Length: 372
Image 1 (cartoon, rainbow, N blue to C red):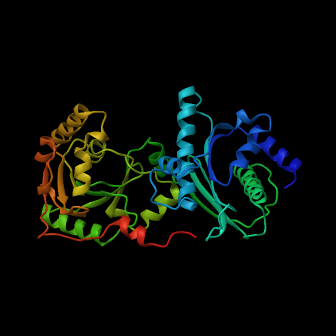
Image 2: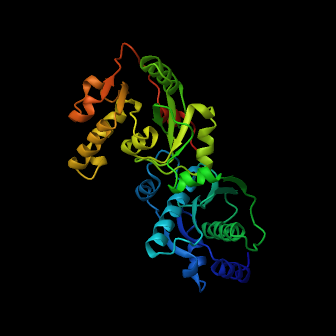
Image 3: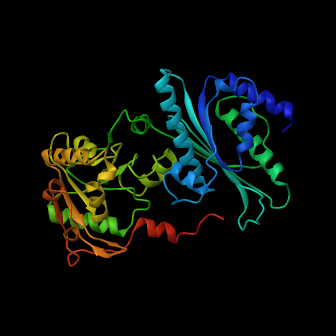
C-alpha cells in the first residue's frame, strides 16, 4: 500500500466515532506507529501496549497455555484490550462510546531461522463480535522490515473495513473467522447478565477445554451419589483464566447438549452460589485442586475476606462434593487436605477406591501439536 493511501485510510479511522485499545506483540508494532503518526490519533487510540517478552505476554493473556503466535492468543489479547477500553471510558464517564479491542501477534523474520511459517494473527473484539484473521508470508521473500510493513498495512485495512470504512486491497490472502453473539450472550459477556440457561441444584464447574471422560464420569458418579442431576457450569470469566471470547465460547458450547450446561459470569463460588441457587442451597462437584484454591487466602483480599466468603457459602447452604486428583505429590483426596473450618464443614470427599480417572484438559492440550 502506498504511503498516501495508508495516510488517507488512517485519517478515515481517526474520523470514525469508535475508539479502542491496541495490543501487539512480536511483529506488528509498525501498525501502532502508523496510527500514532497521523494527526487525530487521540480520537481512536485510548491506549497501546507491546507485551514483547514472554513474561509480559503471559501476564496479559492469563497464562502460557497457548502458543504465543496463534489465533487463541490474538483473541485473548483483543478481549483484554476491549475490557481495558471499557474500563477507561467508564472511568471517564464516556461509556456510551462504541469501543473495541484490537490485537496482533506475528512471527516474522528474525536473527534465528524459524522452523514454522512466517505468519500473523489479528483479532478484534467488540461488545457483540469476535473476529480473527490470519495469513502467512513466504519465507525468504521479504526482509524483516518488509514483512512488518505487510502486517501493518494489512492491519490498517482490516481495522478500517471492520469499522465500516473504505479500505484498500490486501497484499496477502487472509483466513477470516467471525462469531456474532446473541443479545443474551453479549449480556453475559459484559456482566449485565449473570446466568444463561435453566439451572438446577447441582453443578460441575469447569473450563472444559476440552470436555473429557473425567468430567463426564465424575458428573455421572456425582449424580448417582446425590440423587439428582448434575449440570456442567461454564463460566465466561474465570479467576485464573482469560475471559472467553465469542469464538471460544461457541466452540466449547458445542461439546454439550443445551440442557446439560448452564453459562455464567460468576468468577467466585460465592457469586455462583448466589446466582445459581437464588437463595437456596446448591451442590458443587469439584476436584481436590479446586477446593484447595477456594480455601487459599491469595484468592481474596486477606484471610478475613476469605473467612467471610466461606461463612457466606455455608449460610447459603452450599455443599461441595470433592473428587481426588493426581498431583505432583501423588493422588490427593479431601482427606489429605487441611482446609479452613467453614469450608471443611460443607465439603464431603470421594475416596480413591470409589472413583479415580487420571485425565486432565491441560494434559490433553499439551499432547496436542503446537502451531508451527
